Structure formats: C-alpha cells, structure tokens
Image 1 (cartoon, helix red, strand yellow):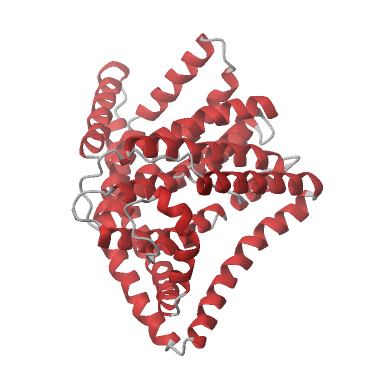
Image 2 (cartoon, helix red, strand yellow):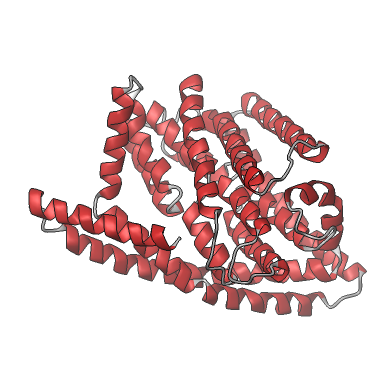
Length: 407
C-alpha cells in the first residue's frame, strides 16, 4: 500500500509537469492542490458522518452478541466458514459478524455494511497474532467485500429510472452475473494463495444457492413491471434489515438483558472507530484526488480505448471505462462517472448500460482497504490489494463480455 500511495502522487506530478511544459496548461497544478485540499476535507466529513451509523449498528450488534444471536448464527454458518476461514475457531462469534456484513452488501445496504464490516474486522484482529500485519482471514474477508456481491442493486435501478431509461431493470441480470463471477474469482485466487481447498460440499452448495437466487431474481425482473420491481427491490432489503433489528431486540428481552444499556455500550465504540479511521481515509482520498485532477485518469482511459479499438473491439465501451477505473478508487467518483456516462451517451446506450454494470458489480477496493485495515491498525496488508484488484479486473472483463451479449 505504501508504494501504491506514493505512485499516485508521483504519476500525478509527472503528468502535470508534462501538461505544463508541453501543453501550456497553467491550471493543472492549482487543480491538483485544490483537489487534495477538498478531498482531505471530504475524508474528514465522511468519517464524522459515519459516526451515527457506526454507533447505531455497533449498538445493535452488541445486543445481538449478548442475546446470543451472533453466536447461534456463527454455529449455523460454521460448515461453510470453516472452509473459507480455517484460522477462525469453530463457532466463534466473528463468523456471525462477517455474515451480517456480507448480507448487507448483497442487499445493497452500504450504510449498514460498513459498520458491520468494521465490527467483523475488530473480531478478526482479536484472533490475529501479529497485530500490525493482515491475517489470512482478514485478507479473505476484505477480498469478499471488494468483490461486492450484490443481489439487489436498488440505487442503480433508481438512477436508471431517473435518467429516463426505457427499461431500468434491464441491467439487473448482467449485474448479478458479473458480481457473482467477481466474487468467485477473488475468493478462488485468495484461496489458492492460502492453499485452501474450495472444492468441498459446503462451498459448492453455497454456490448452487447463489445460482438459484440469481435465477429467481432474474425471473422476477422479467415478470414484474419496472415499477413493481423498483418497489420490490426497495422494500425487501429494508424489511429484512428491520427484521434483524427487531429479532435482536426480542432475543435480548428473552434473555432478560438490559437491551438499552447494551445498545449504548456498543454505540460508544462507533464513535471511537469513526475517529480512528480519519487519517487512513484522508490519506487514500487525497492521493486519488491528485491522480484524477492531474489528468492521469483521462490519459489512462484514452489509452485503453485506443488499445480496444486497435484490437478490433467495440469503441463504444470507452465511454464507460472511467466508471470501471474509478470504482476501486472512489464510490462517489464512480457514481458520478456513471451518471455522466448515461447523460452523455444515453441510459440505453451500450456505454450507459455498461457503466451501470461496472458500478454495481464491485466495491471500492482502496477505500475498503484503508478504512477496514486502518480501523484496527493494520499496516502490512500483504497480498490483500492484488487479490482485491484481481476481483475488480475479473469484474471489468466479465462486464464487457456480458454487456455485449445482452445488449
């Protein structure tokens, strides 16, 4: 991560120097500095903004822990997670935290997924013998997050409807297929590095269940109208989320614990976690801002587009590439790129649809790495970043193939 961070600034400086010396661009260096200052402010605001959500979900998880719900969930998931996370003791409560985080991601609930992920990372750090170095379990967990398996891409369907797409849900199945392949690719590479045998019954059964879910959601997308699909997608995730909260509270009452005091105790940890991630988040956002403001991102996109056309590929995909390249760096940046692409080329163009698939099929690798590892003081990330970026690459290639097949 150290060299990646340095590379962002060095490349930005080189590109800016070339633009000033050979193209007379006198605005590039001020633009870089303005962007870095603004991103530092944004990093602080994001961290502070997370305080309330972190406090809410860490409080709910504390209720779940004391009520025994997290422990029961861990035991139920033990056959699968024992294969994926062999370092975690059987039935350990952190398994429940991991499952809650991944479930929130699959349902498109970003605000809930982050605090649940930070809670899971805290549990993994307790099992970690080397406190400054990422464990194998931490890396597997991070890669599963960066792969961004999404079953209900609510926000993307809403954006397409707002932009006037003829059929906002037409990207639904492509996103499901792409994000599933991204998850499989990331887990497979990480498992190979960790020498985990993934060809076993629990893992294969889980893949089969995901395939059934994908098929079921695809059927629903075909049968329901776009209005009905939007209502369905928007409500299912939040009904499940509220159901989890009520289940934890009722389980706490059944165990005769002080639910309110448990919530408050857990919520206190949300504040400390939010403050702790500020320097890590500011560091990565500032570096990304310098890289983008220098024009290096635009040059990279243009180069890739030229290579695609030179190889006989469809040059129309070039308009969507900024979304794909920005997604590992910044979620809000990629969202802006997606909206800009749909506005420029049209939501029903190949580029417009492809940008939506890019946006919905992976997560922000650098952001997740900075926030999750930063929250527990991990400095040596080992092979976490390459594995996360491999999942991103698999998603990008799959998205292009799927988009050309469907559209």
